[in-house]
Length: 172
Image 1 (cartoon, rainbow, N blue to C red):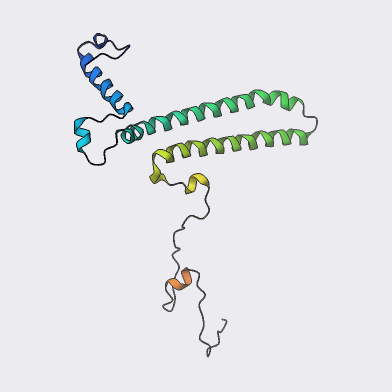
Image 2 (image 1 turned 135 degrees about the horizontal axis):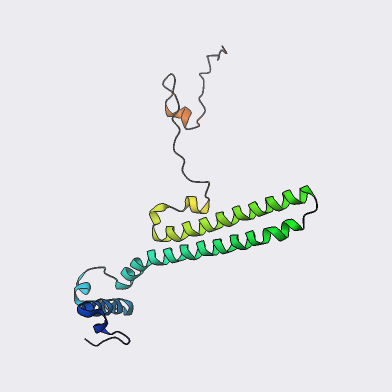
């Protein structure tokens, strides 16, 4: 087994051989080479395994990048508050600046939260995308209506209840 360029197995002491084997296995995964054991397994794709194991790390990196970007944007906004408020001449200008500041903050927090959620939904698809994309067409749980006279779920499902044609409905 040849040493990889830049890897010194003596740097890790007695664990150098273990790290050498580990790095060789990672290199074989990256190049798409499968071990003899892996080729005997049906449906084993080393690139898919590598992508699946690196996906959470990429999502965490995207989240950290988004959080740092949000902190940077909000810090810049706070630094500009004094100059923007100094330009206000009336109480209405002051209120408009404050509302604009908080509206921008809300939009930035919402956008960053959505991007973070989208990064994790790509890794964990069971989270669902309806709340990330703001989909209002999600299936809502059926309401628990009280049923009278054996009407059951027809009233709860929104179906109109039809009265018999020979009976008049009396109002109490």
